Length: 450
Image (cartoon, rainbow, N blue to C red; front, side, top):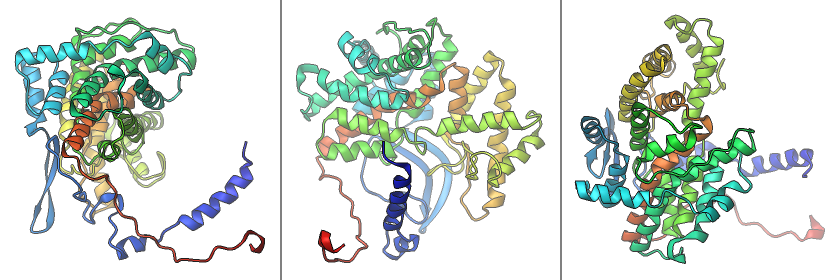
C-alpha cells in the first residue's frame, strides 16, 4: 500500500507540472474538447449513420431550432410513431436500419430477429468465466470485461480479422448477446455482493430485446406490455446519437488503429461509463431524491422552485450549480428523445400510481431553465434532455440503478458496430489529433548532481 502522505505530496507535483493556463488554449487556437468557441463541434469526420440536429448556422451565427434526431436519414419520431401505430417493438428494426442503411422488409425483419435471437443465449463456459467468476461491483466494468473476454470465444476463432464480413458476424453476436451479458452481470453482482438470490434463466430467442431484459432481470420474470414497450422506446432513443458523441468517437478512434471489435466496444463501454456521458441519468435521480428528502412539501411549486434556486446557487445538491436533466451540447430548444420518452413516462406513471412524481419532473422541466437563465442571461437556452426522464422511467420499471448505464450501452452497441464498419469501409488514416508542447528543451542532469 502506497503511503497516503507521499501520494498527496506527489499529486501536488503533478498538479503543478501539468497545469496549463486556460488563456493559452485561446492564444494557440486550441479547440478544447473538440469544440468551437460557440459550442459547436469541430468537424472531424463524415458519417451516413445518424445526425443530431439542434441548430443552423445563419451568416456565421448559431441559431437554435427544435431538436431532431435522424437514423440513416429517417426521423426517429417517424420510427417511433410507426411502432406505436402498428403495436410492435421497434428496437430490432432500428438496429437493422442503423447497420444496413435501409428499413427491412417484413420477411427480412423476421429473419433478422431470428439471427439476433440465435445469439441471445451464452455458452456455459463464457457465462461462468466471464461473468460469474469474480463478479464486479460496477456493472460497466463487468460489461467491458465480458466484452473483452468474448475475444476468446469469437465465432470461428479469428477475432483479429477486420474484414467487413467478419465484422458483421461479430456485430450480430454482440448485439444479440450484450443484453444477456448485462442482465447476468447484474444478477451476479446482486447475489455475490448484495446477498440477493441468484436468478439465472435462459433468454428467449423469440422475444424482443426489451422483453428479454425485463424477464432476465426480474425475480419472477414477468412484465406488462406497457413496460416492455416503454423500455423498447428507451432503447430506440439511445441507439444512436451521431459519430461525435464521446463513446461513438471512441469507436472510430480505436477502429482506426485496426484493433479488434472487442477492444473497440469495450473502450466505448468504458467511455460511456463516465458521469459526463452515460451516467448522467443517475445524477438526475440522486438530485430528485435529494429534493424529495429536503423539500417539506414537494407537491407545491414554490417550495420546489426555492430549492432548485439553492441548487443553482451552489448551496444545495452537489454544489456544482447544475440542475441535472437540463441542457445539452446540441439541443437548446428541445430534445426530441426527452419529448418522446416523456409521453411514455406519463402513461407508465398512471399505471404505477406515480403521477405526483411525474408532475415533479415536469415542474423541473418548466421552471429549471428559467432559473438557469436568470443566473446566466448571456448563455444559450437550455431544455430538458433525455436523462431527465430516462432515470424515472427505469425506476418505474423496477430496473435497479446499477443497470441504468449498462442499458444505455446495450442500446448503443448497435451504433458502435455501425460506426466501426463505417470506419473500416472508408479505411481512413489512424486518428491522431495534434497537441502543442509547452516546454522548452533542457539538459539531462546526472543522478549524482540532482
